Image 1: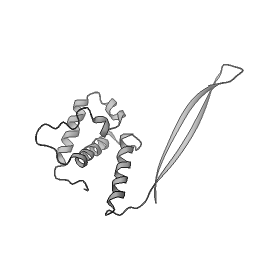
Image 2 (image 1 turned 120 degrees about the vertical axis):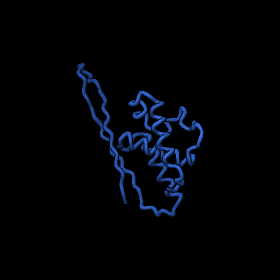
Image 3 (image 1 turned 90 degrees about the vertical axis):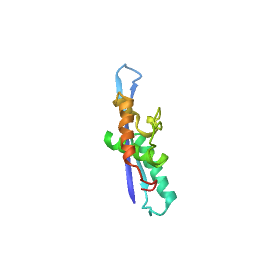
Image 4 (image 1 turned 90 degrees about the horizontal axis):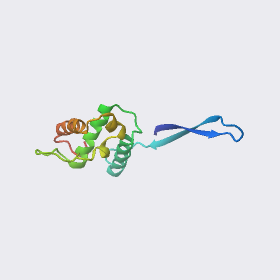
Length: 132
């Protein structure tokens, strides 16, 4: 079994009843998701693992570089739509949040440049099937 681990640390501030000093209180949350070895020919299980991984990348649960996230987004678009159309591709217009985390989108102040980078990578995936 493989285990994916994630943790979060939250901070709350509470006041004492008798004085006005703030007390910081931290809560540590630890989660584990289990992934089982899945044969490549078990298409429903492979699809579920893909959906989970896609969701975790878009929600920024998996640490990865911006370039890796953009590459994964291009692969998502190839999987969803197939080969990039020869003419003007409008798949991304207003839909960057479906493929990339909000952090990556907000860190880059130019959506059009990010879309262009993503479309360039998407075009290079010409000929790949959904399973590849």
